[in-house]
Image (cartoon, rainbow, N blue to C red; front, side):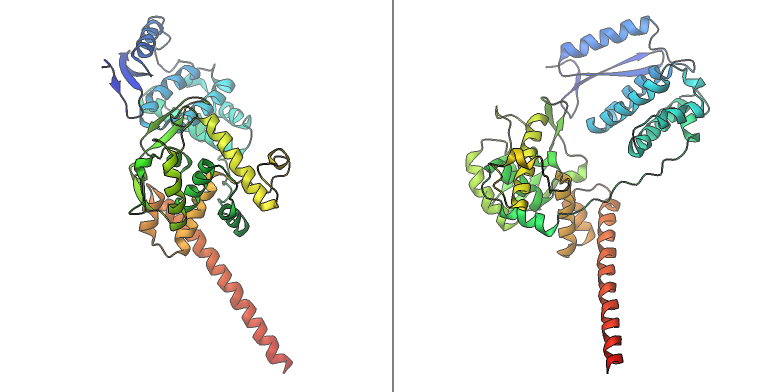
Length: 375
């Protein structure tokens, strides 16, 4: 039994107070945590961890990342970590209290693209607000930088041709085909689907239970955790076409529906290979070629228009709208913690539907008007 606290994500955690600040240390084993605690003590004795307004920005960002890590997912933490690296490369050697708005702006200007710039600005704001809350400084230089006018591209459902391709695929490995159809018929997040075990499938009731997800730490390392939020835990009806596939497929698996080569949970490298095969097969179906024999050629001419696992999730939400599923139930089936996320998709679809009806009305008006004039 470990002498450290074990978190829900499987990691061990220890805390240590230094100069009035609590530091968190994480590891996969008692030995790893002990080594990190020992290094923390050495760093504190060398005054590397003492935080005040003269602390270099790069040292404050390291401290801030440690503070927020316990409360956010690994994916979110990695996003902040990447943004902090950009900030440190640009202005990390300047004392926390001496960074000017113009220097913060130069840091943002060095970012590649508006999307990255917006994320870095958001990260800079957060870490400086934390410093203000601790009474280290009064002003936030990132707050005075130019706001980034960036709007993500609209998520799209599958086209009619893509839907037909997904349904028609036959000459495909069972694992890849079942994974693809679970995304299509149930709208799961990619790592929710990868975490499924045979015990999550009830064919008698035609129900699929989502209660966990996989987190990719690196190309070859991953672990199982709870769903993205409590709302992620849900039970979804398995449509009949998928139920027939699952009945045959379940007889071929031991525990996990989509294991790695050794039977454990899927890794990022293994998933990328799986997804590449799936895209090649969809592409082959769309272009009328044999996918298995044409993989190398298909990578040159890709007509799938950037289909991702999330495309299928958006497509599922679109299907719920047109199936007449009310907003509250759609939120549950999608596993959205915030109803606003589901509402945004439903509102967009309703507006598109209204525009289509208005186009029909305009056509009918002019057709009728022209007919009357020709009499």
